[in-house]
Structure formats: C-alpha cells, structure tokens
Image 1 (cartoon, rainbow, N blue to C red):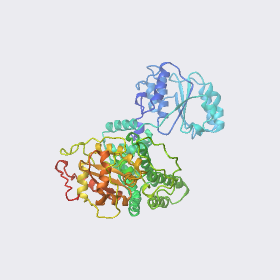
Image 2: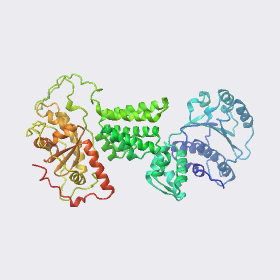
Image 3: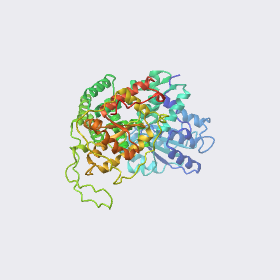
Image 4: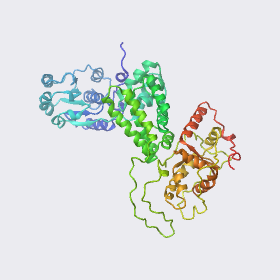
Length: 579
C-alpha cells in the first residue's frame, strides 16, 4: 500500500478532534442539533487551518446514518466521505474548474436528488479563483438551491470573492491555530507513530508552521523521513536551513557591542550552513520585538520567542533607542529583499549598518528636551533647577531596564548569607545628606578576576536584586539635583546585575562610566549613594557590557560542563580587593 502523508492519515474524523477553531465547531454543532442549517457557507482563513476538513466533517454530520449531527465513522455514508468515494459529497477545485462552463455543468447536476445520503454537499475549494462570469452564473443557484443541496465555499482570500456571493452565505472566519493546539496534535501523532521527540523540536516546527496544522504535519513528515524514528531540533535546523536561537542571540549580542569581525564571522557560518537569509532576518526581528516588549512592560507572559532570562540579558545590552534603530534597519531590509538580485550582499550590508550604530551619537536623532516651566515645589522638598540646554553627554544611552539573570540559578542565598529585604522608600530630603558626592576622573581602579566574578554570580540573590532594580529608577529623579546630580546620573546609566550580601555588581553601557565607578577613590561615594535604597552598605563594582558578555560565556561553558563552584563552599574574601 502506498504511503499516506501524516496530514491525510491523521485528518480529524469528528468535530472533537479538530485542532483549534472551537468557535466554529460549537456554532456548526449547535446548528445541527437545532436543525438550523443554511443553504450556503463560506469558510475563509489562512492555509492549513482546517477549512476543507471542517467542510467534510459537516457533510458527514449531515449524512450520518445514526442521525443529523452524528459522526459515527462506521456507517457506509461516513466511511464513503472519509475515503472520498461518497457520490453525494462533491469536492471541486475552483483553481482548475473556474470557467462559466464548469459552473453551468455543476448547476445542471444540482437539480438531481442525492443518491445515497440525505444531503448533496458541494465543497468548492479556492473559490476566489473563479472568474467573474462563473460567479455570476452561480449566483441564482447559490441563493435558492434545492432543499437537499448545501454549498460550502472555501478560500484563503475572501476579499477576492464577489460581495454578492458573500452576502448569500454564512461566513466563518478560521484563525491561525494556537500553538498549544498544534503541540497537542503533534504529540498525539508522535505517540501513535512511536517516535521519540525533543520538546524544542516541536516548538521549532510550531514556529515554522505559523498557525497552520497542515504545514506543521507536512514538516513533521519531512523531518521524520530525514531523521528516522526520532525528532530532534538539530535535524530540523539542518533540513530547513535555519539557525538555532542561541546562535541568533549571539549574532545580536555581537551587533550590540559593535564587534564587526564577529558579526561577519557568524554570518559566514550561517551562509555555509545554507541558512535561509529571509528567515534569519525575520527571526532577528522577532527577537528584537520581544526585547522591545520587555523594555516597555517587563512582563514575561508577553514574550513570543525569548525566555525571561534571555530578554533580561538583551535588554541590558541593547538600550531602547538602539533597539528601535535596529528594528527599523531590519524592516527596511525585509522590504528591499524583493528589489535586489543578490540577497546575501544586501543582508551583509544590513549587518554592517547595524554594527555601525555603535559609532553614532546616541542622541543624534532624538529631539532636545522642550523648555519647561519651573515646577511647583512643596515645602520641605528638594528643589531641582530648571534645565533649558540640551541633554548632557552623561545622559546618553541611559539604561534603566533589567538585566540578564541566567547565570544566577540559585533559588536560595548561601546559608551564611542572610537576605536583607529591600524597602522601596520614597526619596526624602535627608536620605542622601550623608553622601559626599565628590568624584574623581583618574586614579587606581578595582579589578575583579573572572574566577571571582563567577563565584559572585553563583552566590547572587535574584529576588533581592529584582527589588533593587525596581527602586533603581529613583536615581533619575536626582539627576538634576545641584549636589548629587553627577553621581545620580552615573548610577542611572547603570543597572543592578548581581547582588550578594556584601557585593553589588552593576552592568553599564558606557566604558568610561564603568571605569569611573571602579576608581578606588570613588567607592565610598558610590556605596553611600546606594545604601539608602538597599538598606546596607556593599562593595560596588561595575562591568562594562563587553566584559559582562565575556564572563557570561565562561559561566555558560562551566555550567554545561557542570564545573561551576558549589554555592555551599564559596567564601568570597574582599580583603584583597577593598582598601
């Protein structure tokens, strides 16, 4: 017996087996139960979402020998509809039978009574392909067919169907099937086929299917033919010329830190693996869209392709204006692909444009702040001076969002490192009175070795750090303060990255800002400025984003090799670091 494709083998046999489209299933089922059956239906929606399948199930429910609304799949009518041999259920492909003569032949046969079932059902697929004259010939019959004839028209492009046709039909709009429904369908099929599978592989197929069950099953069929009785993510990447999510995030990280050599190196590796450039461009846009969403909302539930820790990492590396510029460049490239003969060269130039964003002044394309009236200051509050000049350089590329916490896998702090609750307190006049904001620009600097940094990352308390991140924007309110403005601006450019009992590591976009925080003579002022929000004094160390990415890579490698230090044995000694 010839092999039958999965999407045909596992075509739903009852309404309950349909993936998604619950609103349509419920409406048709209720219509059958109450015997309120229309003479014509229009099923429209994206490809592979179940239009033809639903039409056949409806035809089966009309003609099942057990009665209206049943789908026993055992009687001769159900079996005939299942295998396509039923004489009263006629499928017509309008793409190849779209002329007026074809319609006239159909109209001639409509007047004959059903041969075997109760209803004669005409399923016209891709009905938008019919010519205008064919539509006009069908109009009268579609409006007043014989009582035992039902038309079901299916199309992916309803806007091409004549309004006079649509007005004579009950219209049902099929939506893209939700990921959870496609996943459940694929898992059921893999269990039936006794195939081992990787959850990430299923997620990748769902992403490629874009809401189409048929596309998902067709790709599943192709992958199983390639890999045998096991479904793996790597096989899907190889077969369809795709890049893994980790490699795509690495490319974006290299772009963000302006590492042109690494960007080109990653791109050439993609090309050698036969990557689909259009798909890669689209995937990068999806990642940046998630970064943008997380920048604005901090809600992991709204992310489509990134996990929360991945979104945290990228938002700390990519400031909001930089993210918007990257999206604009990639969107333009996506539009230009259809205009050029050499897609590879266009995309390579696009990558170079993205990398060159680091060389531009961050505020070049942003408007200067409008002149403001002096604010009304309540008695007892600190008065901030009115600023009418352009934003100072220290405020460019301000990062105020959260940071990557992937390295901080610890659910609880070290046993001998008690958690101190961070109180989000309102800023008062006397909170920072003890701070001496004097900063120097040169001097001896603290330098923490990578090994010590990894120990700090393992010991970090994620929950406490996130509370501090919530309080951190309060430094923005102090940037215009006459006394504390420079120090507050320096800290508002940074973001809390790792927090232990005694150490706070900051991530900062500007290399000069990191150096300034790490100058030994500035440590006291920085620590005193942070103490009111944290509730205790800690040693403060700043990581420039390039250094942070390097250390994170080392952390991941040790994590994969299971060679990270045991949190219970870590003893961080700051005697050799602090003066």
